[in-house]
Length: 155
Image 1 (cartoon, helix red, strand yellow):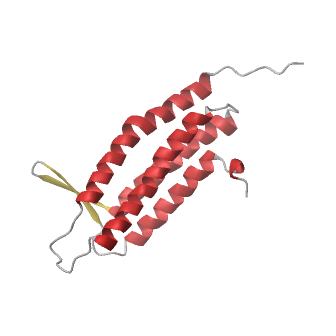
Image 2 (spheres, rainbow, N blue to C red; image 1 turned 90 degrees about the vertical axis):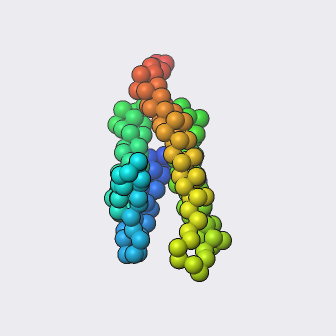
Image 3 (cartoon, rainbow, N blue to C red; image 1 turned 135 degrees about the vertical axis):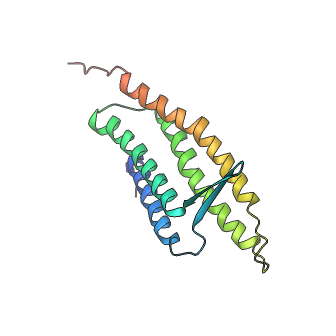
């Protein structure tokens, strides 16, 4: 299989499907909530809704690439597309590897002790990387692709 034939929007749609499947599988577990404590208010969100939101986000990113490349027939800057794809899809992969690593090496028989510090630090670092590096690169790439002049064919 030639890797050059894989389109970037198909990759994002595949990751969106994987996130949705993981979210559906995780709904059967007992502890399926994500708790955010801000001052003295707890925000409790089900994992399924987080998976649904992330899946929709990846789908919309893929749709943005599809609209510019297929519908508008515009070229994007390959370097920016690769950097954005590596940051977003790589962060998804790194996060799941860290979760697997922490489950294997930090499991204890004592149920009140859970070491989620590594997972939380990874989540914060990857979120900052995505929000302040990955998404601006995506927006800049789409804007350049939309407004860049097309080369006219020499007749």
